[in-house]
Length: 157
Image (cartoon, rainbow, N blue to C red; front, side, top):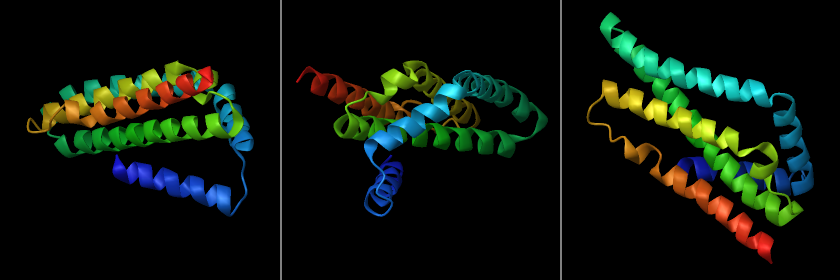
């Protein structure tokens, strides 16, 4: 999570300092990207989650442990990165533009990212029994909830 936070923070800092992108512009771009393809994003995340669960049962029987493990790790890292990105951007856009990014985009995208993260962690746990299931998403759940709480409490004042 620290790596993802540093990458997102560096990206945000470079955009603000060097490209002079405001929170309003970032908000309109993110909402514009997700509003046109909201259903596609939800369907992709749902299909990827179902694929991971089925592949974790099917691929080991075929002797394809590495492929299943690779896809599980790839989609888990992607879900973790996107959750960190949404949490940091949500707070930054709230204090910069006064808009709640997650509320406008819809919390269902966050829930589908959690579903993908849970499915990937479960698939990795089926392949590697030493992998702790809860460590994959405990900190990310806390981060996104902290982001939501900060924005909601700041909205009261």
